[in-house]
Image 1: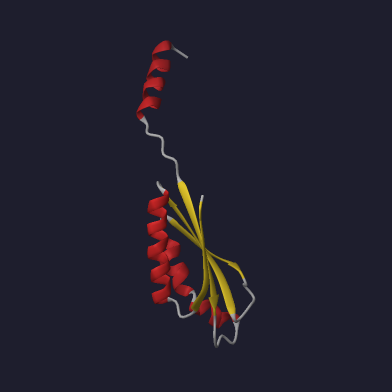
Image 2: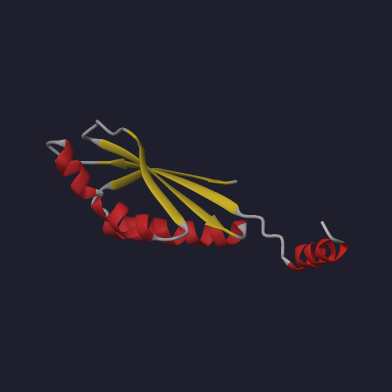
Length: 113
């Protein structure tokens, strides 16, 4: 490697800011009433994947109780540049889920990594 190329690479490395990504994980435990089969259960949670699953900073998945008809556990992971930003984002998502999903939220667990 030539000395000129080495200098150019060293200069470009100093210009790039260091970004430390933060991850927030929110797990929601739901109680369901009146679901007679898994198809009805999936219909209740269609908005979770359709709305929040397409957001670029979020990942949404059903993480437990997949076969149960009376409960569901969903996890939302958020990526951001600060823990405060992630907490605010998860607050917004939790509030929107409460408004749009027709199931009682029994418990919410959060962790910022």
